[in-house]
Length: 318
Image 1 (spheres, rainbow, N blue to C red):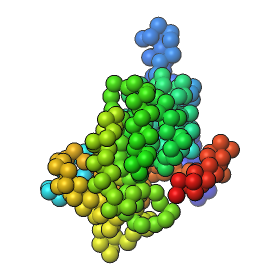
Image 2: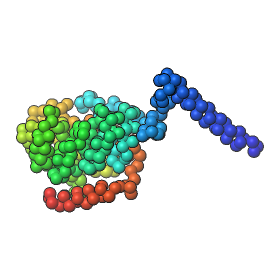
Image 3: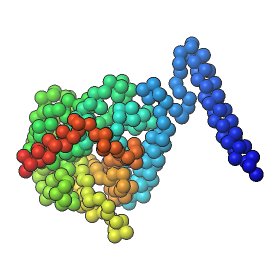
Image 4: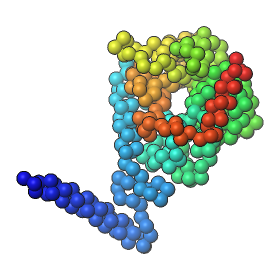
């Protein structure tokens, strides 16, 4: 009766050794085909910064992608048949994890802080390994940080325009950059009315979008964005913040003669993205479900200083 644990242990050791042996054999075969040069890691593993990447991130990304597709299939037929965009929020995560997610097929990434976004987007390894990467800025943007944001390589979209003044500043800076393409922007709406969240009042949405369309030739308005209140109990019905953004899109399209298909809705994060997609979201921002929980204790002194400046800037902009 005491032999069973030993047999079980030997079984796992033998299986692990056989797995390592097969992987080593595959590597040698690849090296021989390449004339002695080191080939790629075994199937299912990727090398990140000289080390084999962990499979966990790839599995998490695949699971989230499948849930996005399943939620999209459950949407009512009267909603635009647009495949939702998955924005992987890499806030506080290292460049190697961004590269690993890219290797597994992810292309759209989001950041909340201008400085962190600039550092990652300018990272030499990311620039060389991720040529098709698309960066979304999803945090609160203060006017004094606009010029810095504009210099971000592969900046694809600014999701958080929350005032006419900010739109004008971004438009001016993008014009000076001389880019041949307009910068895609979303207008952020504070649908929950919480003071802790940024965004326009819902009543100001149409006027702000009209201003962007008519007064900001270097910007391309592509949609509305909201964060919404956290912890909504779905047993009480759909999230009212998401419903409000859907209603605002309808009002916007009717008053400005725009097609519904041309106005995206960015709503939904790790805890509620499936519900958001089911009610109409075309852009979900997911971080911890893909990359794991964030360790804010490791936040750099630069990030902490930016947080302090952000609070000061909010007071100045009120």
